Length: 372
Image 1 (cartoon, rainbow, N blue to C red):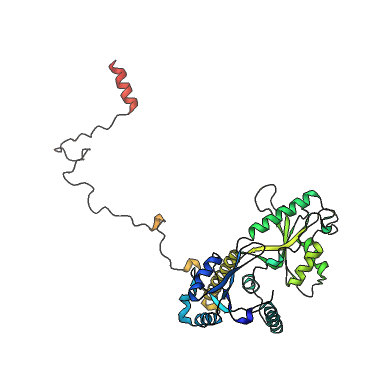
Image 2 (spheres, rainbow, N blue to C red):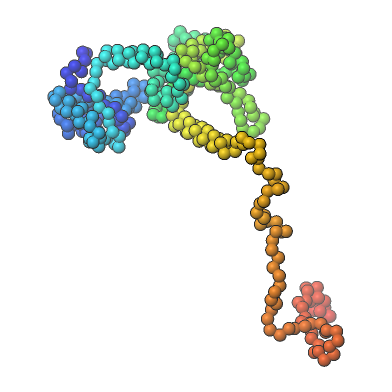
C-alpha cells in the first residue's frame, strides 16, 4: 500500500501513556478537527503499547494547526493526556525513516570515537527495549536445529520461552544487546573455564578487552550445597557483534562441553528499575566516599590528632567512677530522733525498745508446734 504521508494529514505522536488505546487517542484529537483514524503502535510480540501512535486528519489545515500549536510552550497543557505531555511531529514514510536512521547512524559512528561509555540505563534510552532480539537463539521442535535434542532439552527451551514472553509484558524489562545468559551448563564449569572458551571463540589474546563479564551463578545459601553451581551464567561483551558471535557459536553446540550438555544461550533480560536503583546507589556511595576522603585526608603530618589517651573527652555516663555521689546534707527522716540502743554515759535516757521484726515461716511453724 503506497504511503500517503506526503499529503501532510498524518501526525506522529510520541510519549503516549501505555494505558492509552485507539479510542482514547481518537477522542482526544477529535476536538481539533475531523479524523480519519487514530492508531496506537503496539509491539507484535507482546501486544503492548510502544508509547507512540498515528493520527490522520481529514484536512491538512487541521493537522498543520495542531502541529503549530503543539510547538508553543504555553500550550503544553492542551496536549497532555493521562498526565503525559505528547510530542507531535509530521509523519514520514518508512523509506524516509530508514534513510534518516542510516544517516544518524553514520554521523554517530563518525563522532563516536571520543564518546564516553554509556551505562545500560542510558543505552536503553537510545536503543529501546531491543525486542527484535527475543527470537535470536530460538529453536523450535521439528526444525533442522532441533535435531539431536532430547525431549527434556526441548521442554526446557519451551518453558524458558514462555517465561521470557511473560516477563516481556512488563514495560520495565528490556533485552540487553551485549549481555548473554547461558543455561544448561555442566555443574563443573568455572568462571575461568567459561572465559577461556569465550576468548577462544572471539580470538581474544589479551590485547583488547572484549569480554567485560563472565560469571557462573552459584548457591549462596549456607549449607551443604553452598557455592555449588546453579547451571547458568552471564557473559557480557563490549560490542553487540561479539555477543552475537558468541551466541551463534555456543547455542546448542554439543562440542563445547564434550557432549555433556548443550548450552541454551540467549540475550539476557534486564530490569530497567533495578538498573536505575543500582546506578543511584553507586552515585550515593561515590559521593559519600569522596566526601569522607576530602574530610579525613591529612596533608601535613603535624595536623594529625593526638593519641586517644591525651584527648579530652566527656565522661562516660555508664562509668561508676564518673558518677557524682550525693552527700547526706539533710537527714533522711524528720521529727524526733528514735534511738534503739542505749547511749553510753546517759543513765537518765529512756530505754528504747527495738521494734520487733517480721518472723519467718520457720519461726511461725515452730510457734504453732509449741502451742499444740
